[in-house]
Image (cartoon, rainbow over the protein chains, first blue to last red):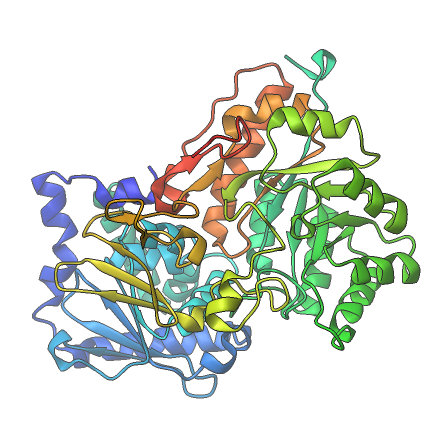
Length: 178
Length: 338
């Protein structure tokens, strides 16, 4: 199934419930509990792929608002080579940022992971870009040069939790109809 | 139908904006991959895109180990007094052993031919050479071995051209279809001060702005100019002037005065192109992701292999990857495509 047809397919009630599971499950979770996870992701990517920052050029250090529209929080990514950060915020906090990227959690994830095309998501209106467009283009191109699966690399860094995390993601992907 | 029935197997020439995209193209069946350096010497000089010399070296090794070629695009026009960067790109291409360099500027072609006589040269679409006289001139003066034709010729015209020129023909089969005057377009320069032809940037991202209102209507701007307004749910296109929707007296409402947001897809014309004498089929899209590269290259690889084996080409739909989610055969069947 193609990227856009997958994004536009009408889900069954059960699929709908399961697709909303991440949002429903994460809504009551304090962001302070999730923050160590995001910090680990940022640190792992920075350590395993330092060349990413060269591709970002002058845009390394800018603040990117990543808005998974179906999750109850947004993320601010600062791809600074020496102090990378990925912080979670409630949407109403409106964190300061230079550029914004919004889409469903899995569309964003699959774009970062190299299995969906960002331009195609933009054409189908499944991806929204705001603010500093040049910074977004640089980030997209830098992430697209990730060797293999960025997601597998990050999940693999979770140690004992790698197995359950991979299982949970594959389960969610399955109900999403991939 | 098969090779014995008149088809010569064409080379599938595929885009790569990053080393990961190059590997994706090779793994998906590209016969050749074209790419550029991280500067104004190529026509996709976009932020975060292209290759460092070290990456190009590693990518050459990857491709050659899998019997794929690597072509380096040095296909912009050096401004007066700034030739050095283009000369260095040619020298580097020769030193690293790329399989061919794609050039557009006569000065660059001349430098390459004189300095590196064994370096194979292809004439970029940016040169805009479409007549037998022009193409023969490039062949005779600079030893051009292949011409990438502008997207303004019909298949019948390509077949006729093939009989009159001494070099191979490369034709676009998928991807962006812009103004029908490649290498001559100054629309971006007019608005942003940066040149597609000399800086390698059409619609620089720094000048592109998106505004979406509460009803999800999207306004796209280049600099201070509105390029298009897309209603909620309406498929969008690139923020290029040639794909803009404008108000003009002769039309009611917004009108795509130059070209519509649409992508070229010649999958149905592949047998005709192969019969017309096209040596290489080119996929556009160095600015696109490795996901795009993998999907498009895989689809065309299978189609070409099917045709060569005498099978009907079962072509995967690529509509989801097209600009504006629409595709066209452009001028290839007829000049009256609009």
